[in-house]
Image (cartoon, rainbow, N blue to C red; front, side, top):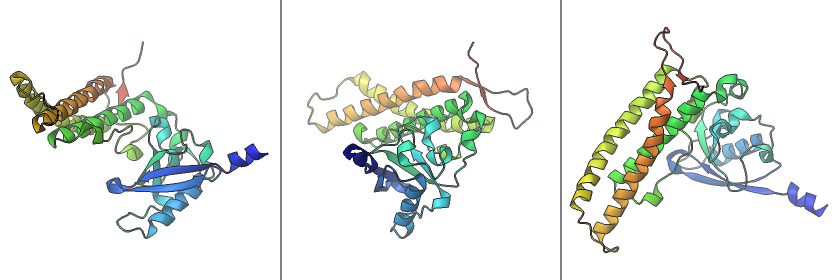
Amino acid sequence: MEDDTKVNDKIYKLIVKGQNDRNLEIKMAAKQTLGDFLQRIDDLTKDKEAWIHYTVGNTRLILNGTSIENALITDKYDFTTTLENINGLSDGSVLTLAQGQPNRNRSREANVDSPTYSNLAQFKTLVRNVKACNRHAQRDQEPNTRPRYDHPEDLESLPPQPMVRHLGEAAEEFSNELLKMAHILGDLGEKLKNDSTSTDRNSLEYQMGRRQIQNTMDALRYAGPACTALSKFVVPIAQPAPRPLRIVQRR
C-alpha cells in the first residue's frame, strides 16, 4: 500500500522553454493530465513580464530528446491523457512552447510517420545544427555552450505530407549555411597551412584555435548526414504542380 502511494504521488519537474530561450520550471503530479499542464502554463505566462501568453487553446508542446513522431505531444495526445502515459515524458524532461492550435487529426493520418516526412524533419534538424555550429564559429564561442537540436525549428508547422516547395525552402537554407561553412573552412585551412598555433593552453591564440577547429569540425559532422538525407529525396517533375515530395524507395 505504501508503494502505491509513492507511485500516485510521483512528481515531474518539467522545464518549459519559451521564446528567446526563456525557461519555466513547472512541477506536476504524474497523474495530472496534459490539459492540467497546459492550464498551468496558461496561468504562469498570463501576466509574466516579457513572456508571450501561451493559452490552453493556442499552445503546442514539443518534447525534446524524443523521436520526431513523438515530439508534438499536443497533436498526438488528448488533453485527458495523464502525463505518465505520454511516451518519453519523465521527471526532468524539457519541452519547447509554440503558439498554434493542436491538430489531433495529424496523429491519425497515415502519412504523418511517412518516410518522406521523417526524412525532411531529419534534414531540417541537421541543417539547424549546422547553422548553430557556423554561428559559434563566426562568433568565436565555446563549442560546449552551443545548443544541440533534436527537432526542426518549425516542427509544429511541418505538414504531414511535405510538398516540393518545402524541400526548396529547406535546400535554400542549407545552401546559405554551406556558403558560410565554406568561408569558415577556408579560414581554418589557412591556419592549418601555417601550423603556427601556440602550444600554450592558456594563451588566447591556442584557445581561439581550439574553438575554431571544434566548431568547424562539428559543422562538418552535421553537414555530412544532411547531404545524405537531401540525396534521398525524389522530385516528381513529370507531375503537375503542386508536387508532393517523395523519397527513394528501398529495394
